[in-house]
Image 1 (tube, rainbow, N blue to C red):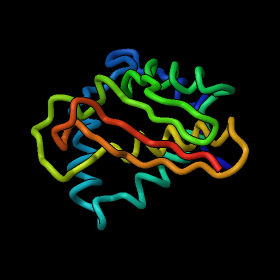
Image 2 (spheres, rainbow, N blue to C red):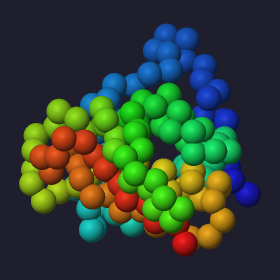
Image 3 (cartoon, one colour):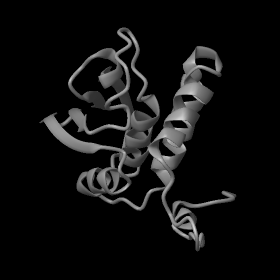
Image 4 (tube, rainbow, N blue to C red):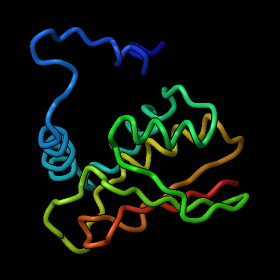
Length: 149
């Protein structure tokens, strides 16, 4: 049994502070707390967490996934290439945009895992996702290659 659902996350009753938290708080949790604070840059944790978040999302199509990704302000996804067994997605205006460049580091594995989890609700078979570019690495956008088998 799941304690919380994605729909539960929409039930916000903060009369004074509202429904937004600053991006710097999210960045701090992700990059200071998890990326720097957990073994292997937190990848096992972020991948597990991201997949569960994605699987809980109310999506029925790739368009739903991309729309929700933007509505949640994770970033603006654009499909670069799509075939029957592969998709290449760029994320413009990603949460890491503007952070200092730190070559050799790609920090958006949580966001990729959210995509993977959401897409797993739509596609039968195995899905794997790999972050291939990241703003933090000095790339123009964050990008993912998604393989379907």
